[in-house]
Amino acid sequence: MGFYSLRLKPFEKTDLTRPLEILLRIYFDRWSFRTEWDLLGPVEHSVRWPEVKRQPEFREGLWKETCYEIFMGLPTSPSYWEWNFSPSHDYAAFGFGNYRAKLSNSQKSFKPRMDWSGVSLSAEFMKSDLEEIGLRGNAFDVQCSAVLLHNDGTKSYWALNQSGLNQPDFHVRENFVPISI
Image (cartoon, rainbow, N blue to C red; front, side, top):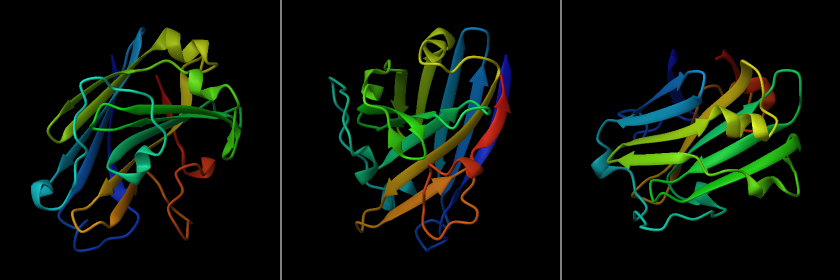
């Protein structure tokens, strides 16, 4: 089994983001690809959590509240996929042919297995599902991110890499990170 341990960084350091930390772990083997986000710090007084649902569903606009995201593409192609995961257990998935150019059939992606436990969220994909949507091979470019809705109504934006940007934009391929699985 392979493993990456990474840290997301806030786009801006503020009084709300300074005491927080988001750790990301990526696990993979021959059959699956799993991501785990852990939010550490005084979250009970600063982060607003959506209500957990019994029946999760596909829902656009998860970034309007607290959610976690992963973007994944092949190094040789401008196309990529985006998955959004809410602590409510709702999810979204979109395919893009190029920067923010959404594919018309992209919402038909499979639903990953998700688990939420207090301040940790995990999402697991079967490698065969990734291959079915064109993500084949052992080398990928990824961007992992989080949007936190704070109790005062402001948001903070976190990612592995946000260099060279005037505002948060997780779709910029130059900020994706190469991984091998």
